[in-house]
Structure formats: structure tokens, C-alpha cells
Length: 204
Image 1 (cartoon, rainbow, N blue to C red):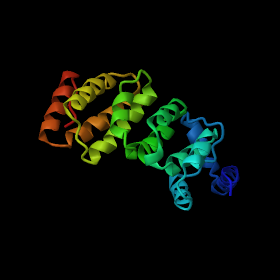
Image 2: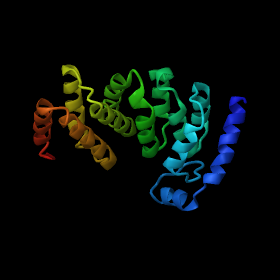
Image 3: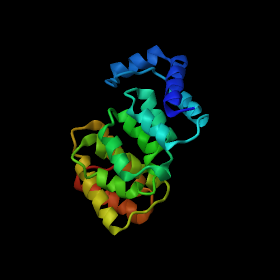
């Protein structure tokens, strides 16, 4: 089966997953996709498990301006084959917070260059790119991936700036990352407390 045939078959199967109420709820929340079948994430994960991971298929799915195609692309892209340059392009083309979160969870956190990419993204002037970077770092901290001294300084500097952002979603993502950072150990907890106090905040 060619990649084009796979794409057609996948898109046809979305009709069976169609959930109009979910799709309408997403539109009401401002998640406006060109095409949105309202398929739930568990259904998409179940579907992804029945398809072999494939770089060409993931690339082709991502190009489709369809919510389910983009999420499935993040599930089917082999992390070891995903280059940072391609991830940068995908990030630029990411339309919503939902897609950014799914990409961070399903794909970006598993890439060999995940940490380097995340620190670069949290320094971006774009809020959605920053948000995705913080979600990646949250996952890496949960995996007990400790940053070096430079990483600590970069993270604290960028996170304290993000916590002053008017963007609520970005603030939440940064706060979650700071919380995961603090759970790495006593030293990290003290650094997090100090950084938050400097902003008049305390979450611990």
C-alpha cells in the first residue's frame, strides 16, 4: 500500500470515530481546525497501535490540515528518525495548544535531542513554542533527567519570565515544569523556591 493510499484509508476511518459534540465543544473553546472529526485521544492511540511507525507516513499525515491527522502523525513518527530541523518546522506549523501538547507527549520528549530542543524553545519569542518547550521539560524532569548548571540557569531565567506572561496557558506550562524541576531533589527544590519567591510566588 502506498503512503497516499494509507492516508486515504486513515482519513476514511475518522468518519467512524466522528463525535460531533466533541468537535463542537472544541470549537466553542477556540480550537478551530480546518477539519475536526472530534475523535477522542484514546481512539486515536488505539488506531496508532494498529499502524506501523513510519517517517514518510507521519510526514504526509502532518501536512494534512486535519486535527486527527496531525495528532496521529505525532504518534507514528519514530522519535529516533525525527530531526530537530523537522521538529522546528512542525512547531512553526502547530495550530493549537492541543497539538503542541500531544506532540510534546507523544514524540518530542522521546527524541535524542529533546533537552537541547526544549531549552531552545523556551527562549523563543513565540508563546506556543515556549509552552511546548516547557511541556517537554516537564516530561524530561519526570524521567529524572537532571539539567547541568547551564541548563538550570537557562531554565530558571526563562521560567521566571514565563510566569509573568499574560498568557495563562504558558504560565501554567511553566509552573508545571518548575514543579517537576523541584521534584528532582532538595537542591532543585531550593532553587525553585528561590526563583518563585523572587516573583512573589510560592507553590510548595
